[in-house]
Image 1: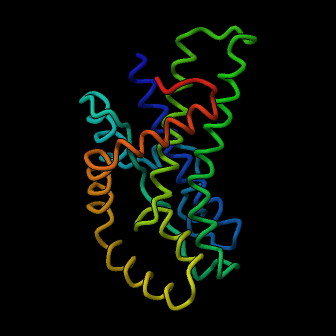
Image 2: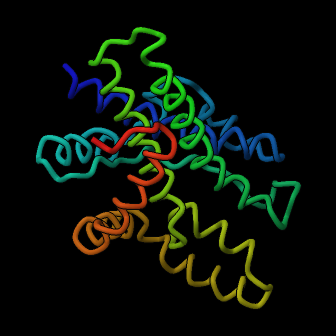
Length: 212
């Protein structure tokens, strides 16, 4: 039952991540996500069968040491955004930001676990929720397309470098699924040591406890 709850927490976290992109785009002037029903709280609207269910289940039950997944990307039209310089970056940052917010909320509850008299079982689940959301935020902030960090990086570059990087992004993003899967593979097999240490340090900073 706990395993199912953890996977459900992951699914909810990635759904909220995508909804945050849609709400940010809508607030900044682009109604694409709203018109396509992607601001709905119904998880079925956002779920990708492979990225939201199959891959997370295989990683979790296969003991990969990392739990990850994705929902269907929320569509938006950058030309509709009122803020032409920072609009795309703000839309991109909204996803990781909601993950960090969720991590902070549940970290506060963890720190208040004793006064609230929370059972150990619920404490363990909340630790997983914090861990999952920190992991999602950190991974998505990697500045490589199609991840959110690449769109944030573009806004920070000088104009000439922006154009070059946008061309690079366009060439990579057409293979979005394969690139994302390759990034996960490289992360697990090459960079997992330092990456997990960084996630663990943030986890400890937020919760006041060590990572599992």
